[in-house]
Image (cartoon, rainbow, N blue to C red; front, side):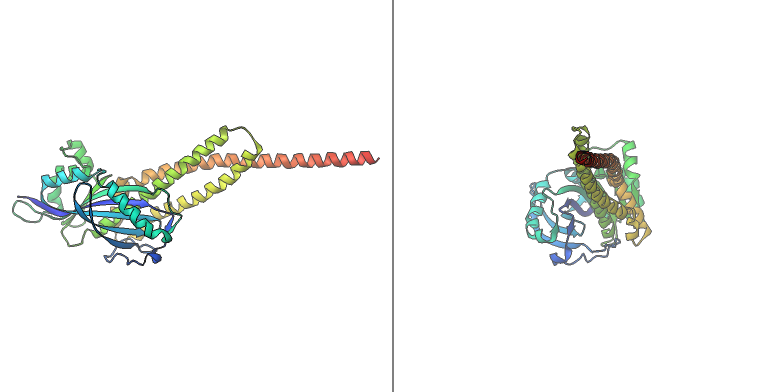
Length: 352
């Protein structure tokens, strides 16, 4: 019987604050080599086994990143035929069964991490992702399958796994899913989707760098989502001010709000620069291309464009409000000068 073996990773990413002081955690950095060069290497913490609401007992670990993101991973080993793996992926990809367990686990850890978190979030924003990591895939003769064989003989099943569907997909949808695949050597394969990915590598621990890349792309998506939600009330506030009654103090307040927007804009520019220079953090061109593929499929560029569009609109509106504030200030100063002149003339003529 054709069998597959590996681990299903349930990943949860949380934006817990603007920054995490990793040195205060007193945890070691991950031991496996990473193709991503962080200015401050992330820290890793293993957790005791956790029982999910489904009854599954899973191993878990936390990854802390300096830019305020915590990644929680649940690991479910699997082994069996392809149809069992398809059913397993359909059970977990896009599922909310483990969400409550993930939130409770994070909440319990945040109580101990509070001193290390700068500007903690009241309600951390969450992003989830599923990775099916194949350690072994055998053919009918119990021989390892190459990446080309996987796509040729199990392409429909791989498409179902990445989409999390129980029923076979149409030929067009299968082609769309498998178009996001890439391979460096005959024994490895990466297929990336929006909510899940399949990673295959015959070498022990060979998939680790790709897993790290997928996690990094998801943290970028989470950061852009954070700024997207941050800018939404800003635009609503601008709209309210523009439609509010035309009062002097409203005009002056607009200048202060523009300064706040400028600070947010600088933060987003810094994040954008990190994303643009992501390939500079990678030590291999294959990993650079893998990161570009992952970030595109996961939706990082889409959210980036959305955030930049909102920043542009908010900036233009606040520029208008600031100009109006300056005009109001100039009018008030001119009015004061006129009043002073009238008083001086009145005093002068009164004396004469």
